[in-house]
Length: 278
Image (cartoon, rainbow, N blue to C red; front, side, top):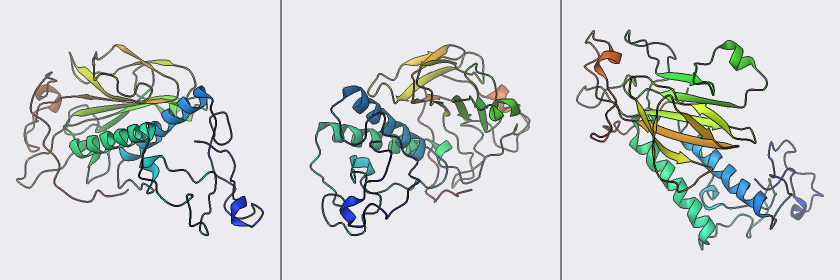
């Protein structure tokens, strides 16, 4: 979040070692700065990256120290550094402790929600005759994304819905694993974009769990079909409770048997296992 280029001078090789294709952005200033706008953006970008990584399917690969906001001062090849560039400092200031708490919150969300612990990859199509897919991608107008939307070079904002009752796994008792519907919205554009929240069912409501542009904001309820003001360069995670569906061999439509109550039991967690990586 702080460097565009590598800074490996301390390695004694005239900055010739280490990769040059770092794919990084310094948010407006190279290295440490006292510019509050740059530092606020860097903190938000850290929350963005951590949210997307931890809530991805498969096994998240987190470099030790990232959860502590550890920095190597732009050195991307610290093989010869036995000092502060590679040591982890556990004496956290308020800012780093706040970020660590955020990482813990996202990890807890992953552990609580079965849709993030799938043992089978998505099919991306209607399942069990319900007319509902296990994963659906949406544009800011709240419409499913087609080929044209995926091919548009200007597309910097989209979302996806993970259906909590179409996971397709069973627990140790042979019962379907059911969790919440999860909606994740992402905006890489630098300005806010109003995003129309989709609705699987009539009367559905969403609860905001995470907004990386408003860390610590209340987990407010948002009716489906309403527009959510998605801040520039932000990620938002929302959930909606679903009732447990009938057994998988029942021919009844999931859409007809499921409703979205505002309160109910916590979702049944998936059995402990290592998720498959597609």
